[in-house]
Image (cartoon, rainbow, N blue to C red; front, side, top):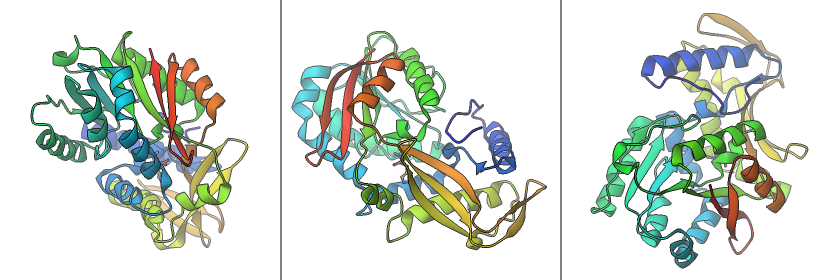
Length: 320
Ligand code: AVJ
């Protein structure tokens, strides 16, 4: 049922824990087994993802940065100054300075579920832009977020880089785009990154790098289950797998059992046959038309689209 990020949960620690347990138990009871990708991003997972963005094979970060670095004048012209920039799933906010520098915003509101990570990144950004008010909000951006009252009167620019939208199946992506529109208001704009369909070998290498960083990111989910849910998963008997699914236009990450295994999670027993997998993430890829269709279904009208020189990745500006 839940091979995507969708989960409407309370964000107090106990709520997170309960939601994690129920998502994992549900997901491990299914056939095929699947756990929502959002649980990959605890503080350790968020750090491992930052490491992924540095590996040679992982082109999205590099290509998106190229667009942000070279199109500042066009952003300034089409977006204008004085907006509150609301970043969804801000992570380490490494790309953000490129945007903020170009458009001269009135405030910056990073939203993320990884609290410690969020606050460290916000503090870092405040040092770079001492005159910019920064209001970090620890929140699950899958639901409509109450923004700090200091920014309610400002026109908003939603910033959703990295093709994180690609983690969701279309139905959830549309729900998210609609709730972003709800969060940001009727005069808002959205600058969203969307990864492009390309050569399968390039796509699969980006999700299975030679140094094994993506494998560690994926395996961290099994370690997190062991840590937080009293699990006994034999992590050394799982291997990372990344495969292009052409029907769904997505790269899928799985954890595959290398032999028959049995283990407990939160007091319940599970088995995996050799070759059986736990589906842990989808990363959907797009073309021009699928991008427009998705945005329009979510209530956003595309205004301008940029790609990097190699046409690996795209950024799209849309109006509410
Ligand atoms: C954070 C969703 C953009 O799908 O490319 C990277 C996550 N997973 N390598 C992506 C990810 C494995 C990443 N996003």
